[in-house]
Length: 538
Ligand code: G1P
Ligand code: ZN
Image (cartoon, rainbow, N blue to C red; front, side, top):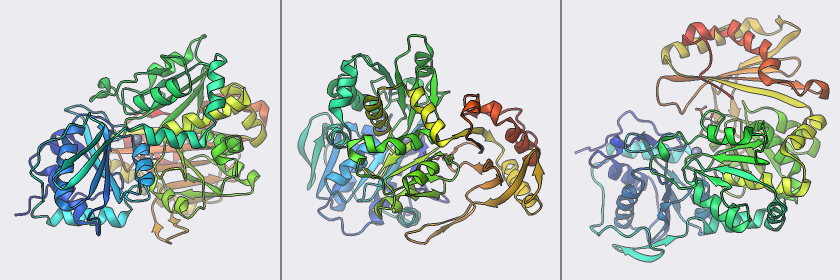
């Protein structure tokens, strides 16, 4: 009998994300795990890494996965203590221990708890998410699965470090932080950052009751001597304390409040449910993720792990071109990829790029194959320790040197999917007449639907976002989210370049107002979404 519950369910590289209650259905997780193994070859006797972000159902799922992995012939499993591993730490563990692959249990920044979301994804031996050909194969197998193999062994104690057995398979419960912390010590100047804290420097890191709490406590407070209490919301909870563990100005409001005070710490940062996103703040100052990527690149020579230079930079298409200006100054390539971390994998594996980032609070490098929240925080701390200037000053100096790419993203969440589709179609139909038209002082230079040819495997990805670019380098981008769970989410991105220092210190929404109005005029956003204003403005 086909017990597959996944009919019609195409699988993305972020794996399977569903309500906890769906995962709790009989045989559901078993079938999916078996489908993963059915799509893999030659893993007999090899090592599998398993861990998750600590959300509700994490430990239960791990006990099941261990039994299925043992019955399928894996030789060894490395499991984070108490079932914990952040997504970047899982990537680091897979790479360091030369594992065959890993299973990460997380629904990233989605809320958790018995009524929240759960997720499972498979990462390959380079530490990165399984590429499309693997996720397609998992999907195919899930459609025709008729049985799964499961070792009849008792549950193990996930809290005890050390070796144990599940059937024929050896299980090693490992410290979830140790390998990751060791990698961070290789990349960053821990002595200098420690000296910074010892000189009285203050910071606040908001772990949002998610996975980065234990990592941040060990690395920031224990190893780097940040004052006790620098890490807030540091205990991972199965429901993230009822919060929405997404580090942005809306959901990380505890941190934003703490950083708005006159006596605010000098540096603030937050990470998401599974630890791969980051938000960077100074005193009463927000660093856009696009600027953050550019600033890390421009200052990489100050950081031990990157002082040998960068091979190149990659950013997703909607991310601002601030990084491109740094790449140009450094004489290196800047690649523009579609939205989604998976597009960076090939470039990193081929040593074409060292740093990469997205406007959606994701930054990372070739040290792992996932974006990495705490890594970005340590990169900033290393720069702050060397430059001994405030976050705001470093950003202002950056803009003065390279110009400022004013930037904002407007999200319309949970709108009617058909209407959202209709908006995109109508807009793209207008494109043939738009080129060369004049709006205000600007001429439309190009309008297209972004398409990308991977420089390494030559695969082509089409329909990656509608772009309208102007002769002064300003632009508007429209895309529909690929990760939203309810209805459709329309994202509209605005960018405008300003070289004049005298005009750089203005609120982005004011500077971008003409583009924002034009987006409404061209796409009739209010009419199609039924909304007067965006749900989230970044
Ligand atoms: C969003 C972000 C994208 C990121 C993805 C996964 O996708 O925009 O940059 O890679 O989440 O974290 P979207 O919902 O826009 O498709
Ligand atoms: Zn995440």
